[in-house]
Structure formats: structure tokens, C-alpha cells
Image (cartoon, rainbow, N blue to C red; front, side):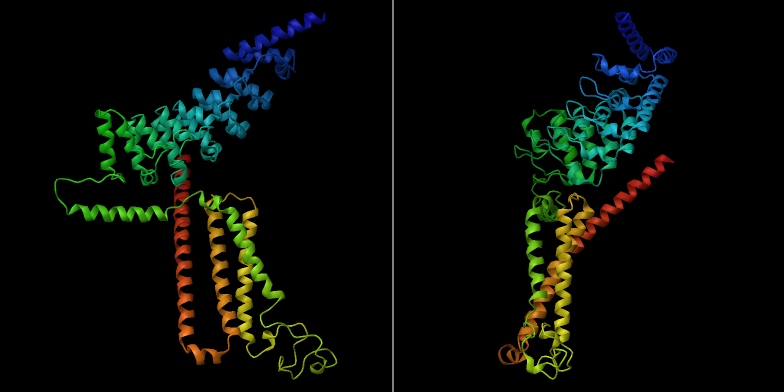
Length: 479
């Protein structure tokens, strides 16, 4: 009797899988009515694929929706290649099934198969543009977060499989991410522009050179020390090679070549000045990894500044009023008519400078010192918070905090300098020269800090403008 029951369950399971292949919802309803736990018994079989894998692959929408209604957990079940149903539906371009799977569980967008590929990779490789759009809308970060083991991004896959339309859509969503657009694979250190030139994808090369961030990175070197254009020198000179070279010339993306037409030397100064300008722009370009690489050094600097600015509070310049000077205290212990406190309001342990005639100068010193201490403490908190330092907002906050720390540390130094050096010293040795030097130091510092803040402010504003523009385009497309 038990063997007959097991044989019947096996027959029901086979019938279920056949129904998934044909999309027969009537058979599914009959089998579930007969055995409500039939879908839960799938994991007990030796089959790696679920019925949802099969229906999603073949494209049976109603059958897939019925399975999702009965057991939503099937969206995250993996086959022997560690692919979920969304991988298969994305590869085949079944947009309605993809949307049904996403409505049930958006986390399936980030499931990686045994090769590290997510559903977005499958859709991009096969040119399923509408599916690519659906997946990006569901998980926008899936474009940049998931990189293959070889360092290849989804953009590399689009170039490798010659899917220009998918590439255009992906670049549209990450047009402001220069580091991602020009990221290199691990094997050869090639960017997408390198790869497009190597594979002689003329239309893709033409499109990539029209993208400003990619064009700016045209002088990037791979592991062989070659730019994208210089890769052509290692290939036979055919029509495609000349066409690609002409595309670089038309786009004015020849950073490593000097083009001389005839013997006209008047063009050389223009070219050299243009190169110098591009070189300066390259220096000012945001380098995505520098902040991550110097995290430890920044932590040490911020901690040292925090310690430095903490010391004057517990050990102020000029010292504190001694507690054992009984002759200068009244009954309550306050100093009266003393050299420290002409107003009789200071107590033992208070700062001497705070009770002197130059108390306002000491007040400014403490304000500058406190601002520097607070800003350096904010830097430490930002560094230990775990926030991604590649994020431009975090980078801007960190830069602003460091500039504030260093600027007010300098102000505190100048205030202490003026507090502790008597004016008679200036009159005797330096007259107004010391004040001139202090002014030069102050204005130089403000100039450097202002320039750094201006550059980063421009970067952040440009980033915000691009984000707002992309969001506006996205809203228009949805409407």
C-alpha cells in the first residue's frame, strides 16, 4: 500500500512538470485539489528545477501566476546552475512573467548563479531591452553592485555580446558614474571602450565616444599600458580599423597621438594647449577610490587633531589660577582684586587668560578650537560609520568636515599666537611685519580651503543635476 502511494506521488509529480511545460492550469488545479501539499514535496525529489523554472522558461504566464499564488517561495528556488526562475524568464524576454516575479519578490534581482551572473546580466546579454528596464526599475543598484569574478560589469557583457540597445539603456541610468563607466576587468585591465575596439564593434565604439564620461576616460591604460586606440596597432589594418580610428579622430579622443597635417606648425601650439587643458581636467576629475584607500590615514589625522584640540580645554594656554593662593581669595573662595581677576568673579581652577584683560581674545581662541574639535570628531564618526565613501554625498561631507577642521585649527593657532606673544615683542622686533605674515598665512589658507570646497561643491552640484535629470526622464517614461 505504501509503495503504491509513493508511486502515485511520483506520477503526480511527473504530471505536474508536464503541465508546467504545456501551461495547463486545469491540470495544476486538479493536482493541487488532489494533494494540497504537492508543491511542498518538490524539494523531496531529485529534480533541481521547479515547475516555476519550466513555466518561466517556456513563457506560460497564467500557469506561473498560479504557482506564485500557491507558493511564493518558488521565486528564490535555485536549479543545479544556481539560477532562479527570474534568470530564465529574463533570458527569454518574457516581460509579463518577469513583472509577475518582481511583484512577488524584488530580491530575486540580486540572486547570482554559479558564474556570478544576475538576471540583469542574462537580459543584457540577450538584448532583452524591456526586461532590462524592468529589472533596473526594480533594483537600480543592481547595475553597479554586482560585478563578475573577472571584474566584468554588465556593460562589458553588452559589448562582448554586441547588444548596443541594452548598452544604451544601461548607460542612460549610470551616465554620471564615471568610475563605473570606465571600470576595468581583472584579466587585461580593459574598459568597455578597450573591449569594443578589440572586438571591432564599430557602432558600439561610435556610441561610447558620444558619452562624455567614457570619452574623458579614453586615455585609460590597460595592463599592457595601451589606450583603447593604441590597441588597434596590434590588429591588422583593415577597413574596420581605419573606421574606428576615424571615429576617435572625429570625437577628438586622441590623447596619446599628435596629429600633424602637412607642415603647418601653427596647429602645434593649439594642440599642446589643448593637451595641457585636458591634463588639468584629468587632475581635477573625481577619483573614486582615493578616499577608500586613505581611510586609515584620515582616521589617524582626525584622531590626532581631536587630541590636539582637546588638550587646551583641560590644560589652557597660560595655565589656571592656583587653588592654594589663600591671600587672594575671599570667604567663598573667589579671587578678588587680584592680578588674575580684576572683577572678582573668577574661581580657583579657571583659566588665567579667561580672567585677564585679553579675555575676548581667549574666547575667540576657544571658539575656533571647539569648532575644530567638533569637525574632527565628525570625521571620525563618518569614517567608523561604515557609510560607502565612494558615495559623493559622503565624500562631500567628509571633505567639508576636514576643511573645517584644518581651517579652524589654523585660526586657533593664530589666536594663541596673538594671545601668548606680547605686543612689545612685535614693536621691538617685528613691527607690522608679523601681522603681514599672519595675514598672508591666513589668506593663503583660506584660498586653498576655498578652492578645495569649490571643486567638490561643483562635483556634487553636477551630480545632483544629473540625478534630477535622470529622475525627470524616468517619470516622463513612466507617464
